[in-house]
Image (tube, rainbow, N blue to C red; front, side):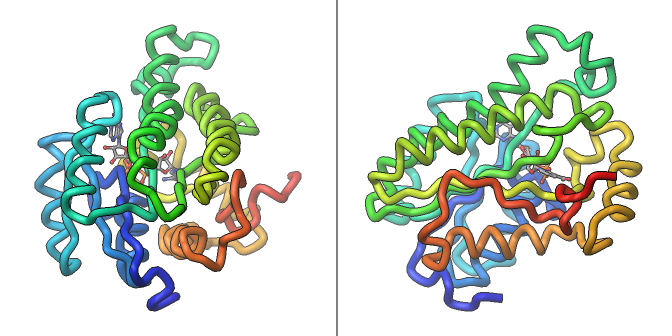
Length: 257
Ligand SMILES: NC(=O)c1ccc[n+]([C@@H]2O[C@H](COP(=O)([O-])OP(=O)(O)OC[C@H]3O[C@@H](n4cnc5c(N)ncnc54)[C@H](O)[C@@H]3O)[C@@H](O)[C@H]2O)c1
């Protein structure tokens, strides 16, 4: 879909853990649309997977970047600058909360768990935007991934819902700051998709079953739908869209009961 739509653009997609990662599906879609794509992984354990995946796309480079480490974000900018000269597209597909925070009642959320979830899943968008926009000289597009749990209560989504609410707010404030540089900032709110992170949420399968049952479009929770929207939002066709949360959930969010 959209072959050539992103020709001449350089993208970095952050948050590739394995072949099921939404980040990886987005990386493939951006490359398919003609972009030069780099991917990032969190640490040495994820490195092998990322490198193996990157080998399947000609010219794709990989970099390490733990978003809790300021030096690694600066190093990422310097590497991208040296290897590509510029950046047009930044995809942030990163979230984390300690497992206990997703199993205990929300009332039991710890200070530490709250801080970790919010820092990794929301503040990191602000941090990478600040560190990487200096090489987005010709404007561009920043995109993150969110979930309806920001707005509504889903059992056990807990502090991740709070983090997603903060993330969506960060999208709006960043859009306001970066508009004058011609940089657009948006989020895709995806329906439930089976990935490593999703499997860490207790009751994820029943969340997915209910979504399939209630969504007007039924069983459309494929990462490719999200990836195609990501490619569009990063293209010049979306030049008028910023500060927005776009749902790619088969219409589930529109339903009452
Ligand atoms: N899977 C779903 O159903 C779903 C639905 C809506 C939104 N999302 C969001 O999509 C995004 C990607 O998740 P996914 O489902 O592809 O799972 P995933 O586990 O494949 O991706 C999550 C990524 O976050 C990375 N990460 C965590 N802490 C990090 C850190 N400190 N520094 C750098 N990277 C770090 C992990 O290494 C991993 O690559 C997340 O923001 C998630 O909340 C997922």
